[in-house]
Image (tube, rainbow, N blue to C red; front, side, top):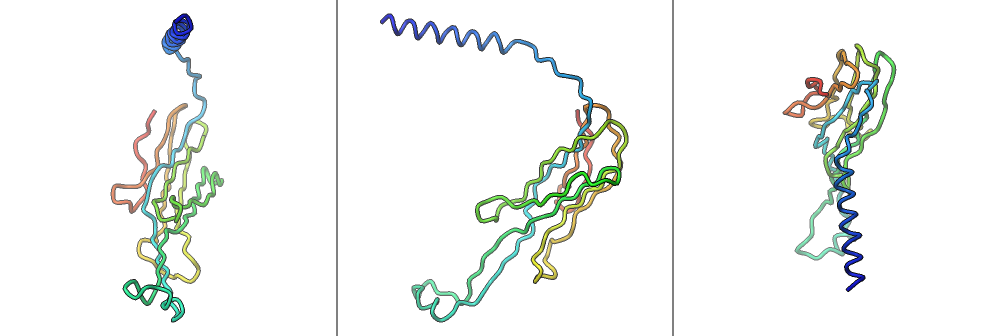
Length: 173
């Protein structure tokens, strides 16, 4: 009985300490930089690669499940390039999510910049296999413009509602 009361007392003190500490104000340092935030999600460019099955492969498949070709689908990688004031700030390959690389492509990057006006150029290009010349929806997405940010301010570059173009949303704090 005494041990249970001791455990209960310690638990109560810990809960009270957590509650008291949660009320301590957090003093945020004055921000000295601004942020250009890239944030979007796209279904990506779907590539379907098919091949004809050999007679040996067909013989191993039950008759009711036979098909003449086997197809595998995947989403392509993308190259993300960002230049700020004419200098490269980011070059990255963005891969689709999912174990089979068949899920959407997510972009979330924050680029710190000094307060003031900056020219920003963003390019998001699907990396197609060399044997494919054209694929529907495989256009490059680009945005270029000027952002004029105060200290601590963020400019958001994202996809439009149709997912067909990059655009800048109003700056957020």
